[in-house]
Amino acid sequence: MRPDMGAAPVFDEDFRARLEELIVWRRDVRRFRTDPLPAGAVERLLGLACLAPSVGLSEPWRFVLVESDDKRRLVAANFEDANAEALSSYSGERASLYASLKLEGIREAPVQLAAFAEPDPEKGRTVGRRTMPETVAYSVVAAMHTMWLAARAEGIGMGWVSILDPVRVARDLDVPPHWQFIGYFCIGYPLEEASSPELERVDWERRTDPATVVVRR
Amino acid sequence: MRPDMGAAPVFDEDFRARLEELIVWRRDVRRFRTDPLPAGAVERLLGLACLAPSVGLSEPWRFVLVESDDKRRLVAANFEDANAEALSSYSGERASLYASLKLEGIREAPVQLAAFAEPDPEKGRTVGRRTMPETVAYSVVAAMHTMWLAARAEGIGMGWVSILDPVRVARDLDVPPHWQFIGYFCIGYPLEEASSPELERVDWERRTDPATVVVRR
Image (tube, helix red, strand yellow):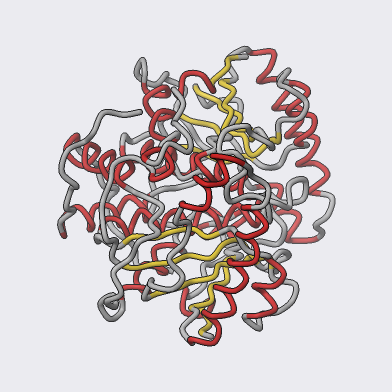
């Protein structure tokens, strides 16, 4: 348990404006510098990740720091196979555009992290997840998104790689076979910054007006 | 597309310390004041939610603002049934403790929001989700967690209710039957603030040292 933090903080207009900037400038980064992060940075960010909401305080997140060249090569090969199959589903100009996309930074990112969920954690004693067991996986997503924002605030970029066979990732990384793979994260200093998604900048997809996805009942 | 935000921001030590406070003091709120939020607050927060990462820029989030008493009563009844069944799974002291937990604020929260995923969105053209279609749901979780942090920065609390039959929620709210229910969120000003989870304060569960959930490969 963290020590008591004292009186509840009040966040002012200036902080909120900066937080909005952080949310706007968070990116899925695929182009990394290869220089390492400062000592302790990843552990500090993982500590913040573990402050994310988890269903019933079950804290189902399990993290694998993928450090060895051998393991990274296995993940890269997994990506290449899955990405080749994805490419084969497009044709014409769309296939050419897909082939030009850079969708991961597995060969360059100095830190690489696989996130898993323990699907049936003892912690939490099942509170909140009897009708919706998928909330266990959702808790790990909340942890990763917490880390993502905290990393960006330090100028550190993250990219989520999901073009992977999830069963093969678990097997290649020698984790307990019942762990559920959530995502593979490339982490490091980005080569560039942007306030809009790369998929928008290369004309793959465009953002929608949020008002169009809200209904009232 | 948002207008270009100009030069990339640099976040300083002070901002990062405040961001850590925000992450520490974000809570799953179940005790709400009943007074309304300022006009436009929910729409502004939903706008920030839609800046969350989504797989392939698919933006699969669909939001239902649940405003009518009738619909809120249906959700409350759904919760009561699911919670009674959950209670029956415990016995002895643990059952008494469970029965004493306040796990939602459906009767008090001035704003209530159901979040769904469009499971097979046209947007994004399947990028990133062929091997892991669950990343569509994960995108909605990232949106809700973005909203959660942004809300807390305005002093607005959110609570995630998952003790619900998800199929019944979709039916009761008259949404397209293929939408996937992600979570029901109670939103409003909290009656109290705390730097530790309520489930920890009432001795239901304790947080774990993050170092124990990290392995290296």
